[in-house]
Image (cartoon, rainbow over all chains, first blue to last red; front, side):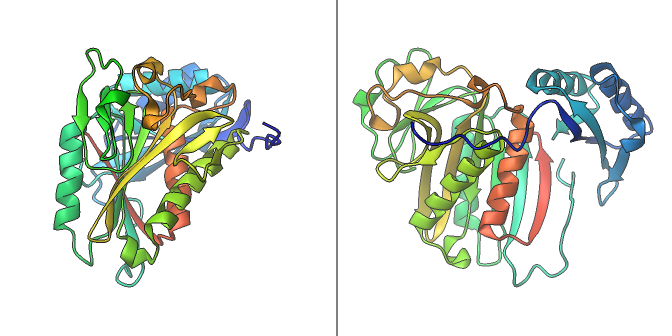
Length: 91
Length: 230
């Protein structure tokens, strides 16, 4: 192939990488997510955490930003979040 | 989780094309998903929002309407389903992103060729985010990195409405593709996102591709749902 590779727009390490964990809204949901994120991203800045409730309030998304080091870290974080049983989906 | 994650439901949905995106948390069997797409397409009317279904399938070979049995060389223990999309034979399995595009193409005022081309270009755009130069081909649908295929397309249009959609190899076992001639081409090599150093896991890839497709089709309004089952 002679085609030039475009420069990547998403490259690791990627600072301020946004992640959203969605689950059933509960009092401990935020804390459960934050605890897991801290394990996978030690430099994680908790002031970036934001909780958004769904319209009818049954579900919530915890949004935060980390310095993403690569796909392996994101995959591991995803698995740990899902393993808590509180998280339905991570985007 | 039917009311989950409703992010934005516009008040003025009547004149602009709107979209419902359904993310499925479970790995889905092929046949019930296909039947559900058919049922949705048969039941929809002029007001029904278009839908994207975002999911992964259990391992399955599917044969399109143009598919010839001889292209399935050795299915082994993986089931083979004869389906009603266009195209030849392909493989779906965990780690492959599937997005079914249930679109009223008449309402969007695009033809089948334009639909195919927009889906292909959306896949090319998402791959470009990772610095991967991919392209569509005029002689065979799908998206390719060099000579190797990374994404497949198969669509069916019934009464001006499409179902089936795209599959993008993200991080999966590609070996079942060796049991078939993908899309009817002997010796077609497959490739996946995880073969490139710079990539993201499935959920992020899915969300980015949905976003690009959404812009390409011009939806102004969307409802997002996270579902465990069909």
